Length: 367
Image (cartoon, rainbow, N blue to C red; front, side, top):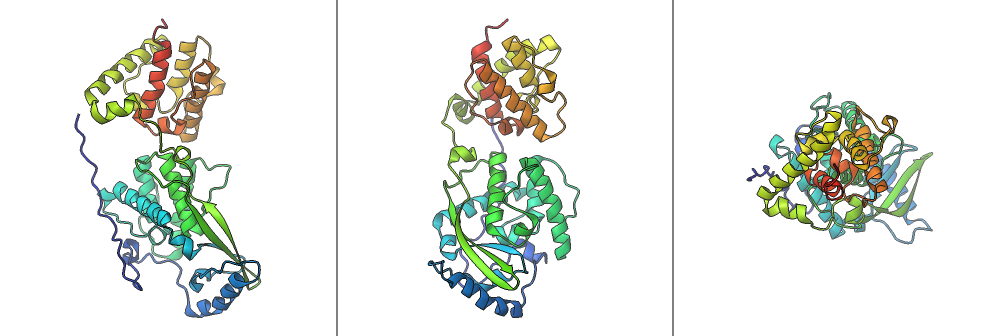
């Protein structure tokens, strides 16, 4: 079985001469952010220096004064310059840039800097549509600052819904992303990588030193703290030990077809009792309904319909269904699946096959 490689976009240039600012793709479209006036920079320069150098903060932070051009009561997070030069943090940014460019290569979108190219919602809009396969009703290009904020608000609302942020607050916001807060943008992109199981490996345990500045009654105060951007690969969902399915996918596609056919035969043998039939393992199990029903059939018990969503309306309900089926699997003595519910919902075939194969090995002799 041959596959057609996905087109790759060219890498963003790495070498930028000292003193020069690389013009981003969206700068060329004129979607510039809030302009900083020279007078404002001069006014906050001394305030910022005093706040950072004041007693209680022994480690001096050489933060460019323009990063502290903030309104009264506004809070701004800036990465400490020494932390920003950490090779692992730079590596993380480049991996994320390459991933975005690969995903959007067909649309000829090239990201060069995360803070400069992600803040107005344009790239994030296209990335969300590519990852979800859905369309978002929002203007393609907005040049005014207010238009950018409105678009970013709509895009982030869709992204947060996809990621499951309904009751808990994410580590990013319209304000933080639009103000080019790199910490917030990194948190957002790492969450997308984790949720959609992007085929990349992120550097482990990335921490950054963040300086939080806030102006209150015209006085600028700042404090430093460590913030974790990535965890272990297991936490991000990127690492798992190679197993037979890795081998099948990598070097034995003809045998993979046989395994898929056997699993379809197995599940249809039991689902036929309820007049259901599976045709595509990749898509037919993504909402979790068949998994819940199958567990009841294999385990010989009735699964109350109020415990899961028989006709799920959104991704959250699908994730609930798959997670509930995983609980039922553990109830009948199976180990906790290595896959996450989100993997099955996102139609990760390898994860779905692993789940079904575990059922097959335990219940293949069930009449």
